[in-house]
Image 1: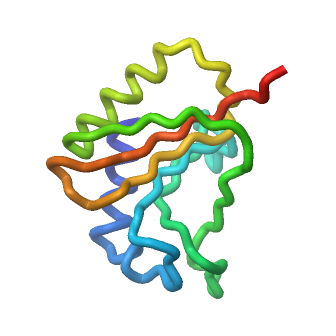
Image 2: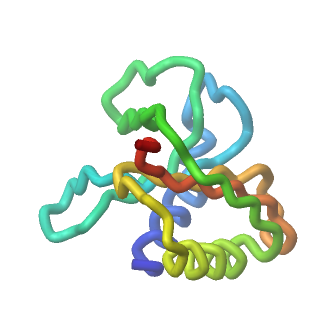
Length: 127
């Protein structure tokens, strides 16, 4: 799955998709992982995205709304690829009451060597 997600980011930035998205709310990029699988063989859908102030006017883009709810937040610093992969390894080994509905990464900058990334993991409501 790492190769698939890496390819998704390559297309997002190298093919000008990120640049072409109008009305960005900020300069942050988002990696969104949802339980809605576009491919029946997949466990989840991965989306490279950015926050916008309004929905796109053309059908060229997918609109994905992050659901409201409880999220555990993890702040990661370091190499953009390696630090995120290591953080997810740790998160997967934690005993969190996860919803597996929506998790997302918020890339605070585009520094590949010393990035700051916020990872949000969807949690079940407290009972």
